[in-house]
Length: 348
Image 1 (tube, rainbow, N blue to C red):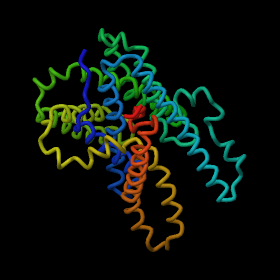
Image 2: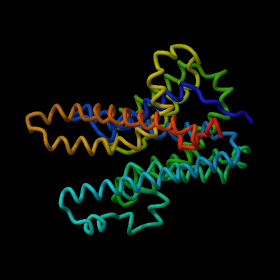
Image 3: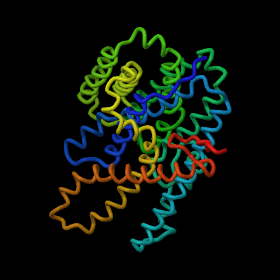
Image 4: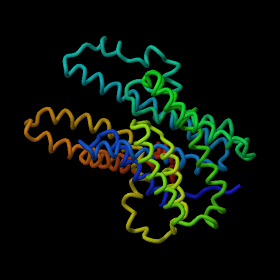
């Protein structure tokens, strides 16, 4: 079984995706913000597909290590965001008991632990990623047979059409956690990444960069049709499948060394900083929003346009600082890596 080596094309794709996540959560005003919110739904699917690609062929110990590191990251991040939220409540002279009473996750602890989240809704990805590692660990022997790939279209149809039906007949907020969980999001996309890893040699021989580009463009065309037909936002549309797969295939078929230098900066963000950017950008946005309250109202329109860019820059700088500290600590022990793994000390 072929082990997948890391390549800069996927790092570049991760870098682009993590920047898009920032712009999704800290949106630009007006039509630009609406366009990004509606069209840029590929980042999280890309993250899961890359997870599946690199998980293909790995032994159980490797997957267990990933799952354990993801769980620790999840618990620490929830704790830190919980403390930050408490600080904000106290700064606003609010009631701590009232704030805690509004946390639906405390009333449904089992559902929270399986589907997330407690203190920050954007952390659902960590929950889904942890349980996805658990799922592929349980399926690791079966993945060699290939039957589990049947789950990909079944679960993705449940994601797309199930959510569309629920959103039009019920209150989606009451069931959104199921559509952002391992069951309908993490597992099918991770398995899709594993399938592409299994067929990587065939893809490199039969699929060209131009074909991958056409698949991505087709996804963009489907976005227009979906908007005309439904006119509503969902985390995952049919177009998301085409765009995510198209971008993934572009990364697989792009010449390995061609123009690498042009993309090295974004690739560095994807390889070293992307997880930290994801974890920190909401906090950075919260701090900047506090600063906004101190700004004269005449300048708020400029702040609205600058905020997404400032959040992205601040998150990247903070992630870079953490990564530098992490590199210095390598010689003293083990640290959690950007992708949730533990990096072994060279001196160990």
